[in-house]
Amino acid sequence: MATSSYKILVTGASGYIASHIIKQLQHLGYRVRGTVRSIENKYKVSQICELYPQAKYPLQLVEADLLKADTWHEAVHGCTHVIHTASPVPLEAVKNENDVIVPAVEGTLAVLRACQDAKTVKRVILTSSTAAITGGIDTRNGDATFSEENWTDPLKTRLPYVRSKTLAEKEAWKFISQLPKRSQFEMAVINPSVVMGPLLCANQTATMELLSRLMTNRLPLIPHINMTIVDVRDVAAAHVAAMTVPETAGHRHVVAPHNIWLKDIAEILRTEFQPLGYHIPRLEAPYFIVKVWSMFDERARLVLMNWGVTSRYEMGRMHSVLGIEPYPIRDTLIDMAHSMIRFGFIEKTKEYLRMNVQQ
Image (cartoon, rainbow, N blue to C red; front, side, top):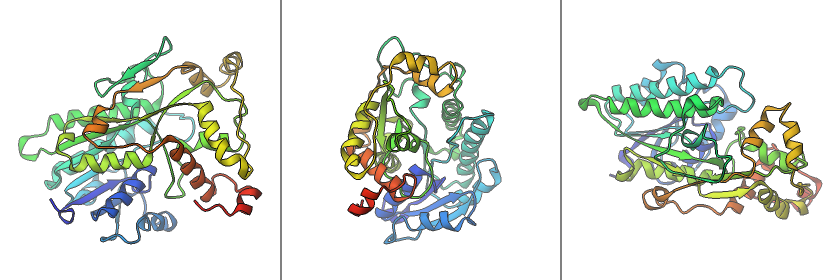
């Protein structure tokens, strides 16, 4: 099937992952339509439209809202494939969990219903998360290994984001399973871990906060935490592959290649950025300090729950089905930090300006 015969909708086009998906699709010669909540935001729209200036087909943008089901029929109309990335990602503490859960679940169902009504959609690729695999599972007694077969129990987690990703994915699979034969289409799901890597637009993403704290010395002591990280470029490539590889239909796909301790993240950043005037912490936080801190701070309680625990994932499908060869973790972290400096999320130091760093 030639790329010109595809018409692909990417929901949440201004998002961190979506921007990379759009760029990769345009690079491959696909016709792409993206959704945004408002096309009146000229700055945001211009950034998305300029992701790949030499694109064979210009990016088409349309308005759609997760909480306005009637906006999705026009967005999906005429599309052969839909990549649904749009979902709330809270940047701060959530006061009402339904502010996250309802748009995630109802928005996903609205997109799927529009796909059913369109009668042109062959496959939907849903962006889920490893949060829908490991959330709410107590791993404090030792390291754990997970696969696509594992599911989060939404009743055992208090985190709205984790519940939203789990419930949205479960409802999506239920919807697909109940489609009448005359209007069936396929679905594949991508479950990335913590997504890092370069920004393409000046939009905030939840994972920026960690690097920002390390780079600006707002995290003076480093917690003994292990993270599972994937490069945003690999996540985008996984979505593109899931669109075309026949074996992806009807399956989840974990993309979570790198386990790394927070102190090692700091070391990678320090090697690259200390000569440029950034002060990256060296010392690990003693357990008892975090224990005391956790009595007053919700984030510290989350840190304590994951203290010293390593969660690993089986990723046979990432390699053998999606064909992903992951970016080195060093490139992921350094490229992300440079992009945050370039977009103004981290201040340029005098040394950085003096050396005229171009990344």
